[in-house]
Amino acid sequence: MVGSMKVHVANHPLISHKLTVLRDEKTDSPTFRRLVEELVTLLAYEATRDVRTKTVTVQTPVTQTQGLKMAEPRPVVVPILRAGLGMLEGMVRLVPTAEVGFLGMVRDEKTLKASTYANRLPDDLSGRQCFVLDPMLATGGTLVAAINFLIEKGADDITAICILAAPEGIEYMEKAFENSSVPITIVTGALDEKLNEHGYIVPGLGDAGDRLYGVV
Ligand code: URA
View 1 (tube, protein in one colour):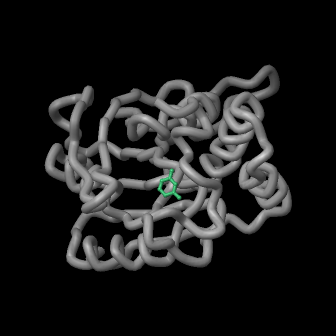
View 2: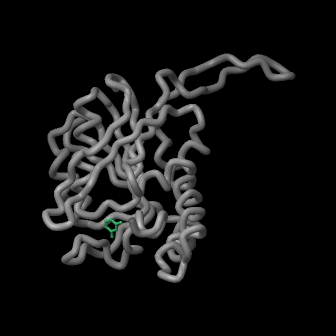
């Protein structure tokens, strides 16, 4: 499969409701954090639709039957620091047996270029399904850099879960991965209107890291 990045925009009234409260500038950090967790759990349900499974036999109190369990190796969940950390709890609640790796990416506010400043991941991700958590798909620079990093380590199936995405970021990712042999999927709560001149998503929700954790 080449050049077939899949984009799934959630279309669900509960997600829209939670997103609307999240966007409200009057929503405080504790409420914002709780809403992000709830949203991720809902998005993760969609994002894990193709999680790898194996057939197992189970003995119920009534009979023996065939069932499905998540296959080994388990998926790797990769929150992008700092704002992606706010999505980790909601994700591991749904997939408690996933392994968690961390990737620190910073965006230069002037050039908007992304670079890695920290990583704590298995050295070899061969054959691993990865779920990357990054709340805001803005220019796409951070996600492209993060996904390329995971591909270099061998990941062979990557799904990015975002709360909001800008059309510019989706387009940039589609170009970046048009010749990729690794299937890439984006699951987002909403597709917003555009980016402004500062690289912020419009209407968006402001700076996700600041709203989760305060300004540092
Ligand atoms: N990162 C954010 O936190 N917010 C935006 O609007 C864009 C990038």
